Image (spheres, rainbow, N blue to C red):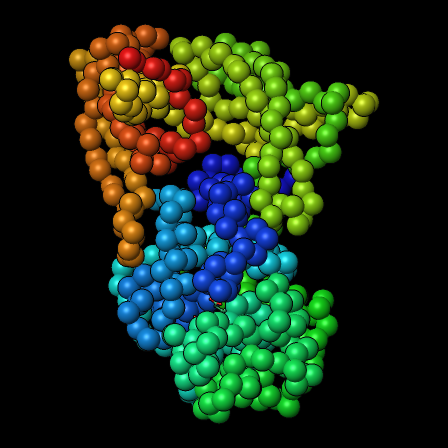
Length: 492
Ligand code: HEM
């Protein structure tokens, strides 16, 4: 069992994106694109975004500043724009998980998708709002410049050799973008090694002098930067990287550091190395899982808690990250009715394998899963996903219903909504809107609550809901619209 403490919207969301998120579909199986592969493009953009870091003053790093740097020759290549569109297109940028976190997640998935090692993922990067310095290394620079570049980014000369080898096991150099590196214009892209996979071929082919890596053996000696870097310690580091186990371990830890290179005022989460939203267990059909809760007045539920047994299970389909770690999980579902007056103060679970062993109590490290407030919340059961049909045309919207404890005369509610950018061009900036809600005529007050409503679209992914009553103002933060199934209503 993990030591994860609920609630933690950032960690929960990062865990969900890593283990169940949609982005992996473009990385799984190392799919080809633009004569290279999608993962190669994702790994390169992560490095370029991070290369603005300066260890001397703690500025720059993986901060999505690349969105403002695409017009620089260092960032040439259609893979850059394609990758940013991939990252924006899934709509997974959230109020607390920005483009920089998505770029880092993309690199983790890229390495795994091409058969490389697991790279531990941390979240919490902060997106820049302007370009960083133009400090991406370029092939025509000399070894001393590259050594200084990597020092400034936080890497030793030995780490520079390994990081370049780890990066250049994927993809290659495009002739149109680097005509001085790949001079033969019948070649669209010259790969760094003969395999698209994340493997040691880039190292072994270099050491065997069979390499076609244009940054090692290209016709233009000035742009043989990989040759100068790889041979800078008499091939000692490259020899050590011949071992697949050492290559994977070295690349995993250097990539983790590369992705965690952020401005010094940014704090990242601990690395996520297991799916902690669930209990990960073998399937046991005789297992029972019980939801227990305490009421707010401490008089309604028995001292052992009110309880409700699970009424069904769902298989969790893990991404390549979960698959490579060999984890399996079931999600247990509950349908519990909670008395509106006595309400709920915290909940927890009991897992009984029914095999004679003691039941396991899952209680968030002893504290229980505390429900901070019950005065303001999105009422999922009263909200509706509405489909309107008129003359063969369909219009869809979400009728959002918010419950505020208190009577109609003294209560009010507003919603701040977050929608990822719809633009096809970076920088991708989300839309944030605040709207005052109307009293909901179709849901009269009930159970001490007044109901408010607004219509919203599927483009909204997160909400903060604020309600005011005679007892004060309360906000339910970070309500995830994409994680909820509202009742469906057809109007025709
Ligand atoms: C001195 C340092 C480096 C130089 C001069 C350099 C240079 C280049 C060049 C010229 C390309 C071709 C890009 C294109 O045609 O689109 C390239 C591709 C690539 N680089 Fe580097 N690179 C360096 C370090 C790194 C590092 C540290 C990484 C680590 C992640 C990396 C990852 C990649 C990847 C994955 C590609 C393939 C992109 C694709 O196929 O679309 N590079 N690099």
